[in-house]
Image (cartoon, rainbow, N blue to C red):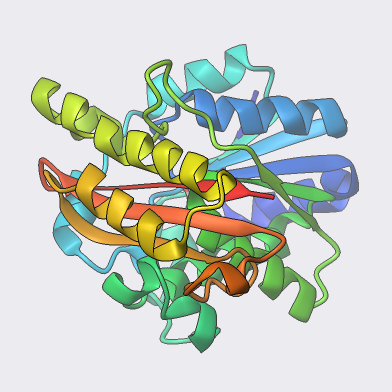
Length: 277
Ligand code: PAF
């Protein structure tokens, strides 16, 4: 597995292999969810490149950035075993040699909803790094987990509007056997917090059942609120999966509905969602 640490080498890699490459951008501390993206990329491309970069531009809370788990050796071992061809793991100064630029790409309607409401600047930081990574590597396909559904939607929109040649692929959310959505942040949960965190997925599954059985949006919202009553909830929403606009009643049922939640457990912010066709 090749290790690339500079933008120049990433561009060289792109010139030789970009068109046959599938790309999985990550912030490291990998888990089965990331490996499912790697597996998909390997099945669909001749080469797979993974990036590991904890992007300071997308952390609105400096404490969260400081606590973000990092273990590069463990990540490298997992990627080697998964058959990844190259890993891009640049130091921070390589990505932001002049500091994080104030350049911003904004989709105000999509960004002010769900996670964007409580994390100002987060998605601008995500789009900045993903834009740059895709420009440097020029991969044929790039793979993103649908746990970060809003992120996926924004990246897809950016790639379309800026006419990137990279195809943006959304991949199913991966859960632990008890339902908890996999996340690098789960390692920060205490044993008690780990149990409490199950309230997110349980509430979502219950709400999805209610939705399928024809219950109203108000009934779903109240089921979500009571299912998550023991947690500090950031949001629990039922929305149009394309615009993220909240739905209000059965008449606004859309072809695709997203039920999404965010809550704090042990001061760790967790998100989860269910997408209903
Ligand atoms: O989903 C993530 O891990 C990050 O937001 C991403 C896409 C790697 C950008 O830093």
